[in-house]
Length: 282
Ligand code: NAP
Image (cartoon, rainbow, N blue to C red; front, side, top):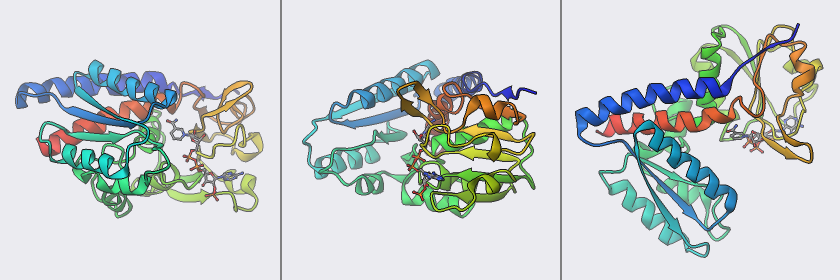
């Protein structure tokens, strides 16, 4: 039987509509709209599109957004100076530095410079520590979006076997904490994992965040599992996930497509984080 397709576009639009309602209430109560500041160093066309999409989402949610563009050859000190300025600016609730940054700049130093209270990407050491220790804080957007999709699908996480393929700081590792928080039994796989198919096939919930097109096939999936595909891989045949959608659809109970699955959730959760930061600081 074909799996139910989890519609990320629909869930993301619901999240964004919910945020827009809450933003309107915040703006009325506080006399100002939640504000996201974005910073882009250089003129990478893909990064420019990502940043433009974030501003559009802010506008649709009724939030204010401001953008700062720095030239490609900007020294690290100049970028850090700007981040610190934004950290001290009471009219700014969230700070997002679009990555990657040019090679003269250390991305870790940039992340460390962000005020944790405005860390809407959830990547500062403070945010990482809060999440890892199960305390409230700002959570990275893509993993938060995965949990939102699972909740929307009413997937029972308590006691479930959850297997994550990938251990990046951006996706895999935060998901470990988020799933543990929900009392799942969590296993993490990576490039040195032996018998990946065997480990994956015990999952009730299988999450692929690998960056290898269609690595996960039907043989990796337990019948009836929920499969979340974070992968976004540009190939000669177009955008592909980490999961072989056609094959896995025959085995899983529910699956996210690529595109239209996890992708749209990332910006939606950025809006959630910006509102959360505004409420905490407002
Ligand atoms: P990453 O930093 O490159 O991490 C990839 C992880 O996969 C690593 O832990 C790596 O293991 C593991 N891995 C690589 N090859 C493997 C294999 N053959 N078997 C098992 N594990 C393997 O990637 P990422 O930033 O997490 O991104 C993963 C994918 O998600 C990419 O396609 C990316 O474009 C996509 N993504 C999508 C969104 C979205 O909004 N939808 C957001 C972020 C990322 P090691 O640690 O051992 O090297």
